[in-house]
Each structure stands twice: as C-alpha cells, then as structure tokens.
Length: 177
Image 1 (cartoon, helix red, strand yellow):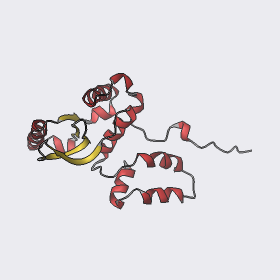
Image 2: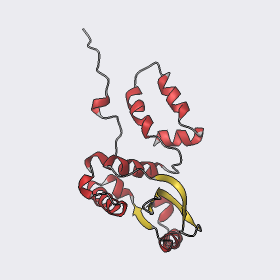
Image 3: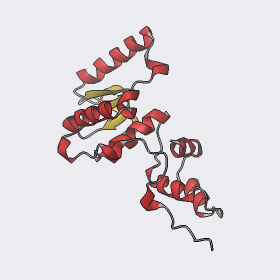
Image 4: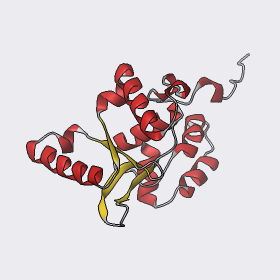
C-alpha cells in the first residue's frame, strides 16, 4: 500500500527501485524487494490496493486501477476502482468513509445502475471481503465466476493480507560465533 502511494506521488516506480537498490542497510530490504514488483500506479486508496493484491494473489487476472468505464457505443459510464475491460467487470471498493451516508449510497446506486445498463458487471467489495477469510473466499469465488476463471483454481489462502515478505524470500542469517 505504501509503495502504491509513494509511486503515485512520484509518478513512477523507478525511483522506488533505485532507492531499494542503493539501500546499504539490509533491514527491511527483503520485504521492500518482495513488494516492489507488486507496486502499481493509479490506486486512489489503500483499500483499493489491498483489494487488487487480494485478487491477484488468489490467482485472478490483474485488474486496471481507476480507469474509465465506457459503454459499447463509447459513452462514458464512470470510473472503476478495479476494471477488467475484456470481461466487462468492475470491482468497486465501498469504504465506510465515503460510502455509508444516505447521499453516498444514493450516488453509488445511480452510478452502479449506469454502469450495469452499459452492459458491465459491478462487484462491490467491502472491508470484510478483504480481511475476513469467509467473506474473502466468497468474494473471490464471485469474481472468478464473472471473470470466467474456475473457482477450483483459486488460492484463497494466498489472498490473505500480507504484511511481510514470505519466509522463502528471507535472506539466510549469518551465524554469530
């Protein structure tokens, strides 16, 4: 999440790569090196990044971030958080901060209806879909169905939020004698 935010501020991922490569102190370098290939430009929120990472780690195709959704006739329908253009699927993260007031829900409903009328599928993603294993598995199966991916191919366990690099990426420690 921090990598996406930093890349968005810098407008590019290459300064992050250079910073990691020139890092002289190894503390944290393994985690940063593991995270760098997963950093993307275009995320507008930490939960959008978490949603994208959940989807990708589960084995689903990587979506594009915050791109215009257009109808078959070329008319603009909205901007989607996670967009699979070929399958015409939009994943929308609905956070508490911007999507719980009545007027927000009305606005979201109007926008969702416009996108659906434009022949797209909208899948709403909530915080429990990212953080709770039962909700996460159900949401990933739902997305897999819309994306044409067999639910049997999903790696739901790998889709859990990660805070550190997996153990296999750790550098062997030097023995102290």
